[in-house]
Length: 143
Image (cartoon, rainbow, N blue to C red; front, side, top):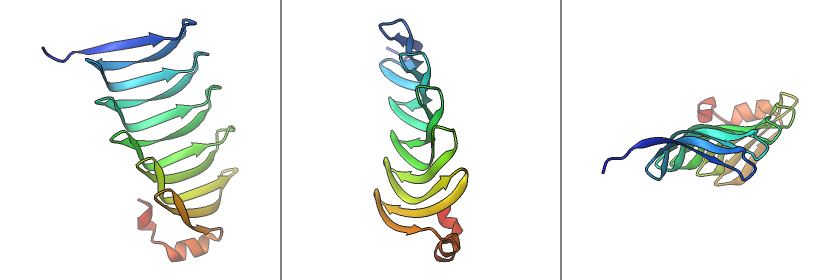
């Protein structure tokens, strides 16, 4: 029996679309969109073998962007952007296996106010002076 891609939609009890995307047998593969019960988009991104992969977007139930970033093997990895309710970047962080691992930059009103360094989810260093941050770190560490 050959695998077959089908476009699948499921709905909430109130009739609103809950999710839609490509499915291969029982596994999500390809692009999917998920919705809140009020009809607003909740998240969207790609699946491979039922695991989130590549770039994803997450939204609040008022449609404002909440966060966006990369998945690898079903886990958050690489750079992620996190937004406040006004739609401004609150912080951006390097993640590995769903936890902060690397640098995090904190913003207030689009202005960089603090840099932090994490290892396996635990903060190990913080800088409020960006000159000191640049002096202690290679910019190549940010990629």
